Length: 222
Image 1: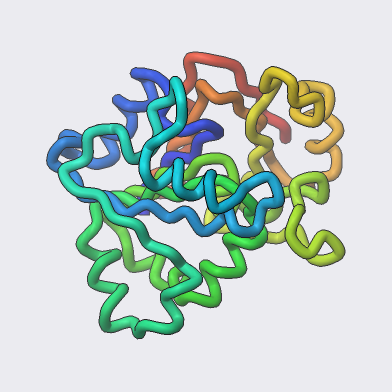
Image 2: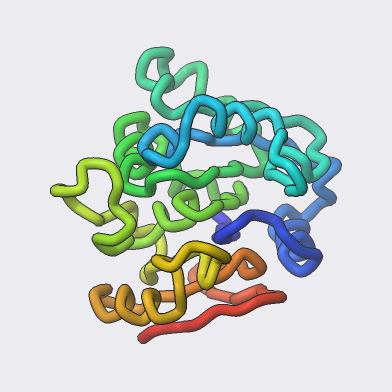
């Protein structure tokens, strides 16, 4: 699987170019599935925010669904255990890209495992995973206690597909908990390498090779 791990999505030309490179074809010739599941575990999200994401109705923002895909559908992980793999696995295999929205990363990791999607990932060698916030963090080993909003007395561990952690929304306006100073405190609690990235930054991972694509600010912690 080819990963494009972002904080805010495809927010600039550099990230879009990287996405096209991972796809190996124009966006207009690519089929996408949107995964909104992480929102249900995040107290800041609601049925309205899920609808806005699926419908592309965020004011002054180019959302994941608005990039010009050949086709796009919605894949809700919480539904998959009830319908059988013979139906949903072909949907996933037919997609060129999975657009995995933000929300709560531990909740998303839970449903990745419960649905069987986590077990399927190793076989999706040509599929691109575009993560936004929690949709990126879910691929890391752990997210840090400050980002756990679902079952906060439980684990902060996620899927561990990559070997680094991610602090998203670096210095986002009005979010004091996502300041550079907060990122440094967070990094001190993470056992392993980590990146803090802002809305204009993405991390590409292909066959173990990590590349930062940025028109903004980011920091690496080791």
